[in-house]
Image 1 (spheres, helix red, strand yellow):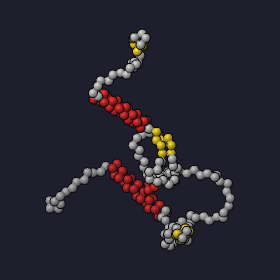
Image 2: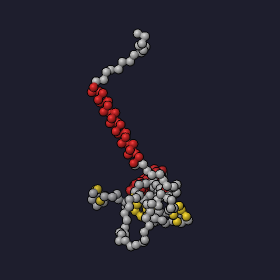
Image 3: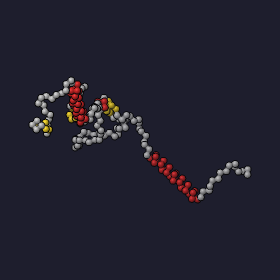
Image 4: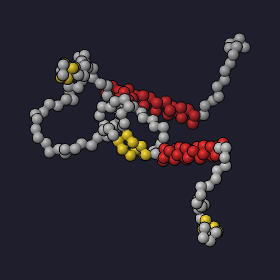
Length: 187
């Protein structure tokens, strides 16, 4: 018993099928690794011949593409010629107003713009009328003001009558509306 190690580790015995599966997996992994390494060397980019310069250089009002620029190989120089090209060019885009040059106009009432007094690009002054808005809410508000003035006038007249010292007596010859004097009845 002295030849035996103090700790023993027993591994399960592998069957022939297990050994064949492990061997096949290792072979496939080796083949894949060799093919990846070979393809990596074949597609490796060649080392640049010299230091790449800037893509473009601005000289005053001109833009120059230097000789060591990476764009130089993609630029083609050709003589000027006439081409039969369409006169319009449709491109996708978004038109946005410059927020530094725009002002939000927030009227107190809603409505429809009936008249525009200034055009795009016109200079305006403080207090200048820019547009006319037709608003049903404003029309209703003016109608309510007129009704309130009429009610106030009627209340003042009623108050004056109540404060007057003598009773109001109709003028001679005054007839209420709808009174027929000849028939002495209402119609």
